[in-house]
Each structure stands twice: as C-alpha cells, then as structure tokens.
Image: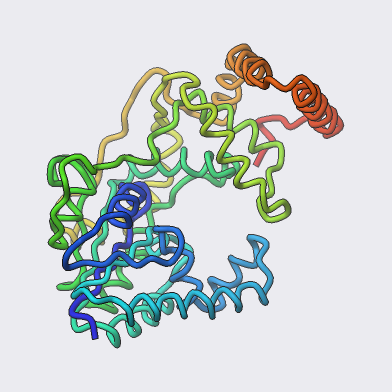
Length: 356
C-alpha cells in the first residue's frame, strides 16, 4: 500500500497543463507521477470510475459503448500497474476534468473508495478562480475548443463541482487555493503545487502552457465555429483544429474582456454557489468586472472584429502557400482550399443573431 496519493483536481484554467507537463517529466526521489499516456489523467479517471452520466457524454462525443468498455478495462489496468509498480512513497494523479461538469458525486465517491484502498492517506488539491476571471478564461478556452458563442459561458458551479471531494475525502484532506498570484508561491501554480506536496523544483524547469488567445483570434474562431465543426463525426478534425489555432498565434493583440452586461446574469444566478465557496475558503471570492471601452457585449461584436481580420488572415494564408516549396504540392493545396471554399459557399449564410 502506498503512503500517500496526491489528487490534483484543477479547476479548469488554473495552470493545470503546466503542472502536468513539469511533474510528468521530473525525476522525483519520493514522488511518482502516474504514466498512463497523456499527463492529464482526466478522461482516464472519469472513464474508469464513471457511470451512466459520464458514458452518456462520451457517447455524445462519438464514442461507441464498445469503445468505452475497452478503454475502461485498459485504463483501469494501466492505473493498477502504476500503483503496483510504484516504488516511491507518493503517487501523483492530475486531472482538471475531475472538477468539471463532466463528473458527479457518484464518480468522486467511487474514485475515492479506490484511492483509499490503495493508500494510507490522500491529499486533494484544487485551485480556484474567482467568477469573473473564470468566465473570461473559460469563454476563450471553449471558443478555442469549437464551442458556439451561446454555449461558451461558464456557470460557476463551485459547490456542485467541489463539495463532493469534501464529502468523500473529508475537508481536512482537501486544500482549495485561490488562483491569484499573491496566493501562490512565487506567483506560480507549478511552484505552489510542488511545495504543497513536498517536491523541490529546479529553477529552470517552470513551464507555462495554454497562454491566452487575443480577442481578435477569439473573434475569428467564433465565426469559424458557427460554420459547424463536429469533432464527433470527423476524428482528425480536433487535431487539425488545434494545429490551426497554434498557427494563428500572434493574430491581433487585444486582451479578451467580457462586458458586464454579458457576465452579470450568470454571476447572479451562481450567487448561492459563490456564497458556499466563500464560506468554504474563509475569504471573499467575488471579483470586480473590468469595465473597458472594447469589452465584448455580444456575438455581433466578435463577428465585426473577425471581419476586420480578413486582410491579416489572407496574408497568412498566402504566406503559408508560398512556404510550400514543392510546386505540385502547392497546386494541390490551392485546389483543396478552393474545394473547401466552394463547399462552404453552398451552405446557407449564418447570421450572428441566429447563430447558436
């Protein structure tokens, strides 16, 4: 039996990718980061310990029940292997998806029972953004991942997502940390998490992933998403979409700010959840809405901003074609682009007032 299992639960947009990237590659004397494929263990853990609610969502994403069952068996065997072969006192598991709407009490209960059967103590750590900061950050991430404008807003369900861990592991075992630089060691989530679990980091190993997108890029992707991306139908589309977003880094330079009129209804609806969070953390957890002249107040604002990027996007497209040194390949790429444009023009136009 292990001395301790550390369970890092996010939340979303709190430096989880950086934590996972650093610790999954670090040789630690007393800690072992579970090696089960990607360093983000979310999908593996909620598939292994999930039930009908998780399976329904996986089915919606294009998985068949047979695929889910195969993955569940394989990923449980992978987890069993990591625990059995762990020669160090502490095993680390990390998945920000564990504190997302994708999971529920039953999943946390079954995960907790399993971890308690494999370790003497459990340490659960989560980082928490205040609501307005969370809404801005999650909005751009969901647009980046292909969501439509109206489905990209965070509901700030703090109690629903975090209280199950208190109930299963006990409050004393669950540490919730405000995700603000003043509350983090060296203002950094990786350094803070490492210190909380007893890991010493080399000074040159800190990594920062998932940097923010510009407002201009968010606007362009909002228009793209409205044209009907379906990651469940075409498996490679998610990979290709990620490559596209990376290739557009540097488009514009504006910092996305959602307007007060957009976010206030969501924050007001989440007031009981925020009240619970403040009581749980013992400090105020409401942040002020940033009021700036160019704050996004509607999807039409983003469509207008996207239209203004047409020349810059055209230049990037032509530069990419010129970078192709094989003439035959360049011709094929141009024809493929024309084919895609013809397919798009055969669809009815989408008005931003109707999109969603």
